[in-house]
Each structure stands twice: as structure tokens, then as C-alpha cells.
Length: 318
Ligand code: FO1
Image (cartoon, rainbow, N blue to C red; front, top):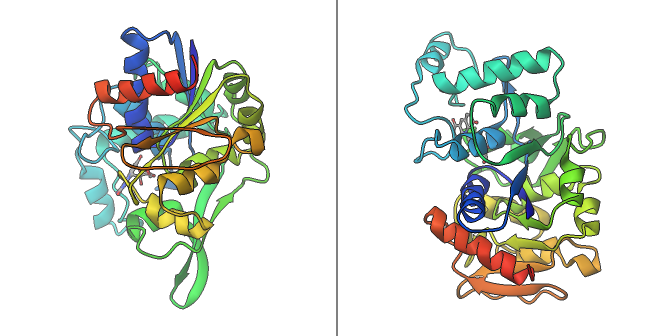
């Protein structure tokens, strides 16, 4: 079975661990492909940084810092501290020494003309993840957040909003700079066309899932796919399990609930992307044209997450 997953960073990485676990312990998946959000990507200190691709890569390779969810385990911060002594901004973004090696390799390959999809494949020669990782696009398409700052309305980079301001500045809107010219990354549309099952990970609906779907051709490929499409709610009760989805959803007028997000994604039969929607035990969702299943959605370990995948497969009729 070929499973294609639309995923963001930290939540997406944990979910992909469960998909891989299900696939390798008696599932029928012989191939798992993740289409990963690159809207968080940023250039800092001359280095190209791809937070969600790196979170997924490090997590699946067992090299991620478990506490932070991003960056490497056993990390050191000597270069970051040295940059701060130089007063080299931004000092608010934490670049670890081991992580910088990844950004140096990536930046060099991009400068040599390789597309991000080739760069990602090259990095995976070292980090064996058991899952194919595809950037949603090979083009720059960075999420910016419109906020009120110093009495004026301005768009700041998502990383500045999230890391420097801890998402405490109300997000008035989200803008994907470069979306008008970005095209789906190498292999992305094919992975949707050829999938036997498409899963939408419990990632941030605004700055991860919508960001991926907005890239030219991707939403249409999901809508027209022969595979069933099953999403898993990133909201339990009225809050995200992790991250800042509750700081993002009001900006697009969506209620912070499993039903709100499910309705936002919409039924494939009426122009949306879902055939089925998994919500956490105790939550409910009425979404025309979408089969809703309530089950435990807290990804406490790979077995539990694999159980979520098994139910998604079942509700997809596979
Ligand atoms: N998140 C933080 O909260 N603080 C940081 O200093 C930080 C640095 C960082 C460096 C590389 C990287 O790949 C991710 C990093 N993140 C940091 C996480 C990142 O902002 C988020 O993981 C995603 O962009 C949103 O999920």
C-alpha cells in the first residue's frame, strides 16, 4: 500500500513515526511519502533553514531533541553564542552547532543549483528515515504574519512571529510570499495521484496544512485523487495538543475545535479535501459528506499513533 501524508513539523513528525510504525509492524504499506510544509523556511546568517523538513528528518532518524521537538539531541550552542557576542542579528533564533552543519550542506547545494527536493534526498542519504520526504515546493514560499507593531500594520516572517514574539502578537492575516509563482515540488503531484491512501497529519491547519494545499495543483490533486483522504484533528477540545494553531485559526475565521477545522478542510464531495475526519474521544463534529470517527488522538508513543493510523485505514474502507 502507498500512503502519502501531508505534514508540518513537530506534530507531523510524531505522526509520521506512527505511520512508519504501522507500516513496518504488520501494516500493508510498502511505501510512505510525506509532503512536508516549507512555509516556515527562512534564511538567517546566510544559511537556508527548513524547520519542518528538519524536524521530520531528525525525528524519524532518532536524532531530534525530544524536549524541544526541533533541532538535534546533544546539541551545543557555541556558534550561536559567538554570533551574539558579535551582535550579529538575529540573536533570538537558536541555531545549534550540529544543526548548522545541515544548513551549511543545504545552503551549499542550493547555491550550486540543486532544487530543494534533491537537497532533501541528499541529506536523507545520511538520515535513514524509512519515509520519503518531499518539500511541498522547490520554490521559495515563506509564510509571513500580518501584525500591528509599533503602531503600524506590517508583515513579519513566520519565524520572527513564532520565535521572537512567541505568537503573542495577534495574527491579523497569513501571507505566503512567493505563492503566486511557486509550483508543486518534484514528485509531489505524482505521490498524490499514485497513493492508495492520503492522510492529513494533525499539523497546524493554517501554517502547515493550508500552506501545503495552497501550492499550485496540490489541493486539486488531493480532490481528484483516487485514494480516500482521511484527516486527523490537531485540536483536542478547544486547544491544540502542541504549537500555536489556536493563535492562527482566528485569523482565518475558523473556530478552534475539531469540528471547526474539519469544516474548514471540507468534504471532497463539496469542493473540500476530506472523506473522513478523526476527532479525539469526547469531541464531536458534524460535517456534511465526511465520515467522522472519535478515538484517542494523543500521540503518546508510536504504538498509540500506529493505532490512530489503523483506524484511519479502517475508516477509509481499506
Ligand atoms: N523554535 C523556537 O521556539 N526557538 C528557536 O530558537 C528555534 C530555532 C530553530 C532553529 C532551527 C529549526 O529548524 C527550528 C527552530 N525552531 C525554534 C523551531 C521552529 O521555529 C518551529 O519548529 C517551526 O518553524 C514551527 O513548527
